[in-house]
Image (cartoon, rainbow, N blue to C red; front, side, top):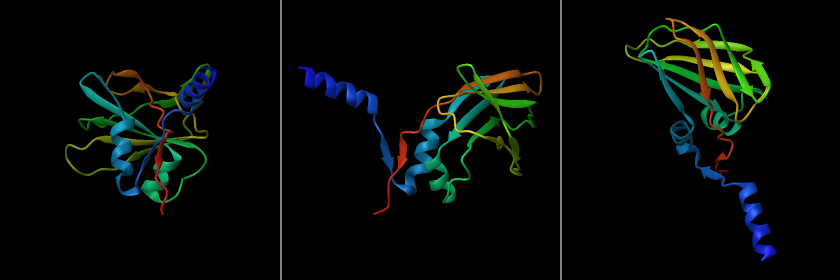
Amino acid sequence: MRYILALGATVLLMGCETRIPKEDYVAYYDEKCKTELERSGVRFFAIPLTYDYEIAKWGTPLDSGMRVVVGATPRSDLSFEDAFLIRGKDTTGAVLTRKMQTFELGTADMFVLSFADRIPGAKLRLKNVSQGIGGVEFELKNCQKIRLEESK
């Protein structure tokens, strides 16, 4: 009986890891890891990028930090004052915020936020979002266990 309990505890601690082939990885990850919410008629989404995601998307991790893609629809030329990752009592501010330029009608406002450290399971807080929206906070999903299937 002790053996079964120990085995069960080990399995729970390890968690389930999902391995996805490179050609399907980005679409699968986007679907499973996107957090969405609505404020003042604007639909926001956030996707934290992992090491495996960056390899699947760009062929290499960009650096040791963490990036989060944030979007808002309908396109409304939103801006915000600052962005922070928060986990427990720890807070770290974005070191770089870059708005992705889009020229298509009806597309989302997109931002890439870069942070010095990877903080899985953190919340993302946007400070003073324009158009009177104020603060927006996302519960970012921890997608570290969605792994890129290794090439054979």
